[in-house]
Length: 144
Image (cartoon, rainbow, N blue to C red):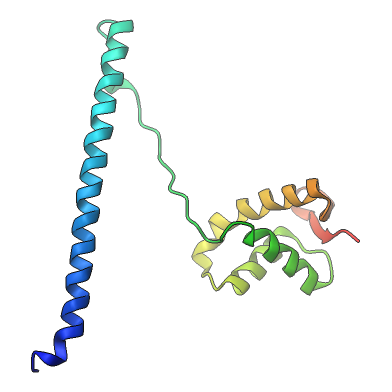
């Protein structure tokens, strides 16, 4: 192929490489800062408890938040799903409706369930939806 035919591919690859190199530099700076902060905390621990080994303290799992929806979008989609159904729905049915409406795959289901339950609790406090039943048999419907 000639060089003219590859110019867009080359430009895209160069742009992608520049972006990744910038991200790596940023992450290295973040890592250096976090390591410095950890060293300071370890020093404070040994001041308060001489002979203490900070390495004996376990690590906490950092959970990265996955943004599936914009601000307020989840609540609107839940209300829309209940409105379209025209009958009370269980949490599993609501999640299924949201996955279909949002275009998310089944891989989003585990993280979506707790968010839907939290948003439904918020909607109850606002008086938008009401629940019937308890536990696994709970259903949600729009308030009249």
